[in-house]
Image 1 (tube, helix red, strand yellow):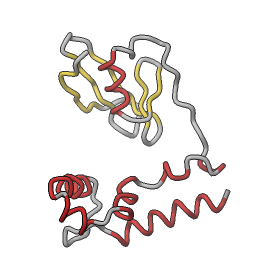
Image 2 (cartoon, one colour):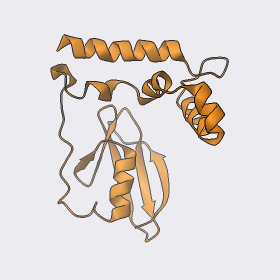
Image 3 (cartoon, one colour):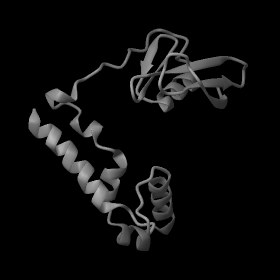
Image 4 (tube, one colour):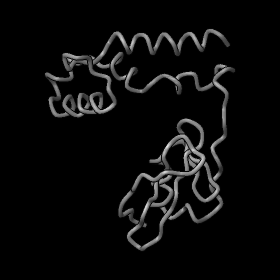
Length: 145
């Protein structure tokens, strides 16, 4: 199924907004927020809205053979890096000077992504100090376990 449009919607009793996903064939699916980042649709749980949309696109959402996402505690040290913000990893691992010189189009895409998620400083450069704090926070979590 092809997705026609996705609209944010208020879901009663939830702190975050949900999404009504409409397909070209006229079907609609409600992706309800679960916790701080996950979504539930037709009784199945997904890690992200993108995962819900992928499932709808593949036509697998209507079928119940998809396994629900298994919750893993970060207190046990598992998935510790899942709690580090991905943009922090990009900022800390990418050599932006080399990237800009070698691949200007890819550099622009990376900078635009970081800007969309608020990971640029007031001068428009990647916020290295914030990324270092975020990675230190994630490493501290892994040391506790």
